[in-house]
Image 1: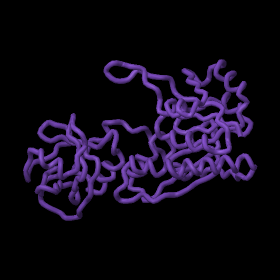
Image 2: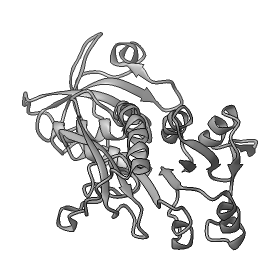
Image 3: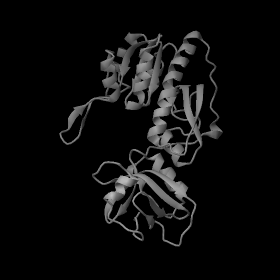
Image 4: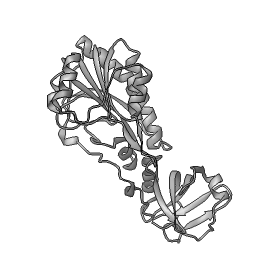
Length: 309
């Protein structure tokens, strides 16, 4: 089939590359406009554009998806299908163009965790499994009929970063499989159950502030759900410290939440509202991420000192 691929972040790269190696033809890649970034405000390409250039694919970067000019460009390509991975909401005028419609890949088991940050929220909420869903796009976000789902276990040491990579690998293979099924007319769309719908709103940096009065397991879930970015954080002697990975112990103490109750050359234990948090990867403001052993070498703290929310 003739495919128009739409995506922007690095999450979409594996999907683009695998479709490029399949029996389907990518006739164009649609991605976001180049944007100024950094101190010098130099124009920066999207990760999908960089990948598309390496594959010598035609690239379109519309400012507005609902512009008549862009619609005409797409119509001239005569696409069979749109494949959308981590992109903007498509206007209904565009959805009517491809002969076999438009499909999207979402990093959750829809209808759970509709929205911008399904991987983050699944971990923050302590879910034990998640997965990918490929569905037919409708005007309402993440509500279309399900074409394919695949589950994956969320392990104790998973972070948003590691789970992202796992889902990318299984999702890319699944997407090609679904394209083959669509071409052969073998898909059997299943409507989503609206009663089971939950939402995963966009993550904002301020959500990472650690409330030490909460249970250790909830704080750990927050840390892993926001790692590597934007990162959960607390303050120690007026310096922001990002917590990127952690373990927990159920042991209780009489110390106030946020207090360092144990510290040696290889381990730090911090009191929470219930249980102890044992950070394993941290990052001081302006520094690179360090294992807890490396972090402690330059740490100017002692047992009894506190991290402040």
